[in-house]
Image 1 (cartoon, rainbow, N blue to C red):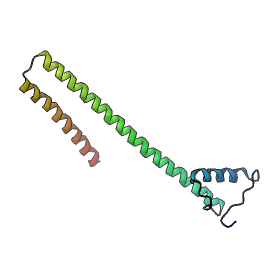
Image 2 (image 1 turned 180 degrees about the vertical axis):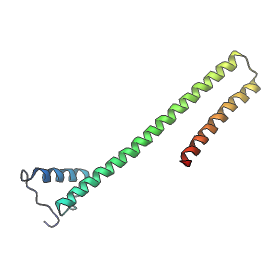
Image 3 (image 1 turned 90 degrees about the vertical axis):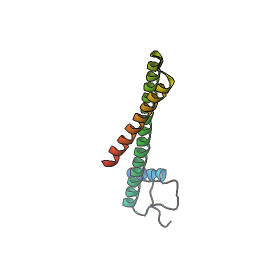
Image 4 (image 1 turned 30 degrees about the vertical axis):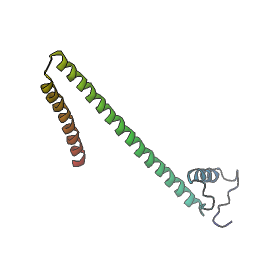
Length: 121
C-alpha cells in the first residue's frame, strides 16, 4: 500500500484521530492519503482553516443581508409616516408626489454616500 499510513486502532490514539479528521474533511478521496503524519496534520489544519474562511464569508453575507433588510424596513416605515402626515393635512396630489419623491431621493443618496464611505476606507 504505497502512500498509505499504517495506523492500527488503539496503537496511537492521536494518529487515529487525525486520520479520521482527514477522511472526514477530505471528501472521501481514498487514494489520496498523506504519506507522513506531519502531512496529515497540515492537511487537517488546512481543511479547518478553509472551513473557517467559508463560514466567515457566509456569516458576513447574512449579516449584510439582515442589515440591508432592516434599512428597507425603516424606510418603508418612514414612507408610511410621511403618507399619513400628508393625508392628515390633505396635501394636494402634485405636492404629495413631490414630497414622496424627495424622501426617495434622499434615501437613494444616503445609500450612495454610505457606499462611497466604505470604498474610501
